[in-house]
Image 1: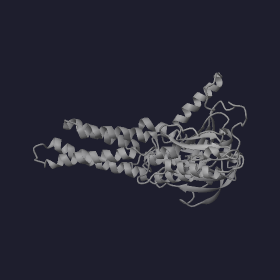
Image 2: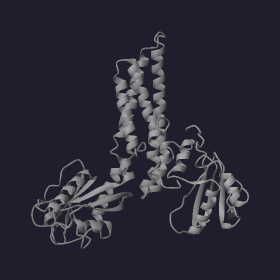
Image 3: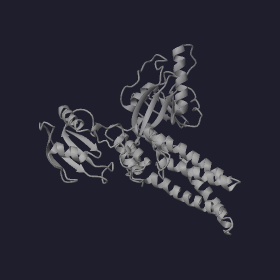
Image 4: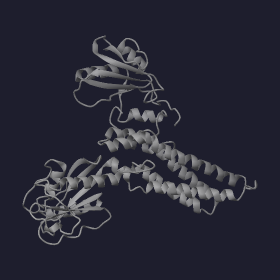
Length: 441
């Protein structure tokens, strides 16, 4: 873990940690060096540590603000590592306003976004990877996202990176010995073994990067684009898949001119469906722009639903590209001949025929695009960028002709791993990481 670092500003902060709006109970959190004094002033005396106590809260004029459950959490055994407290208030806005005003009068200030977790990081309660997982857990929409965030918050990803850092630290030490003590007759096999270890570590980092972006896809959600010619039932299909009317359905070709989005859960994974403009040549400037946007968004999608209707004639070949493609034939309640000898899925949004099979097929692809076995997956572009640099530095170290250059590349690789966990060089990324948090966390 990181060394304990006290709150440099000396501020005591507070924020609502429960949801916004009117509720039965509002949870107000405090953290900082003056927490004990402020809680005692509100309650009359400080409650026993880590014991819920029902107390009357009073302002400086001794007027009762609320009768609340109070938890006093002395540091360093708190979430932030500082003296902390929780006030379980009644949920009326007047109660919250009165208690907040009383705290400000005592010298506390409202917390910034992510400030509680940032203090936990600075005080060694978690590394930067675990802190990011807290934000991911708060934002999790599905069970799969929750599981990934919990695994990361429990230290699985940080343990992997710290293990690599320890191995690389040992290699740097061996390399320094080879440079500093050339006359000690160290066995020549040591340098050969060191190079093998560098290459092995580089291979593990490269394999970690080559994960199909599964962790990032699960964290951010997948994008499935629904494409095809005009009037084949794309908008009707999207409406049926998401279970609500998100797109206008009309028999007039070119009704959909922009990319419409609808987000649902498939196989435990958040998926955004894109209802795109019908693909065709057109002189209409607005429709042509819609076709261009449809082509661009579809090319970047994780999966494409290539839609055609059951009109008589041969089924066109699905689009080619790097992504996955599922061929779908709509309106099969009118004509089934198009499906003959084809692997395409036939559906009828009007009767519901084939929709369950299509849903299952899409859920399978959603799971296969995001599920990872073995070590925990990368979850953020920041991690990927740092590890890409680590791989480049280790490659350079393995092929360096001068010992001094090899040593510098190894040290830079070590710093790259340290930037992920927050052990070195994180000042330039802290604001970017913690500003994504909600207030109160």
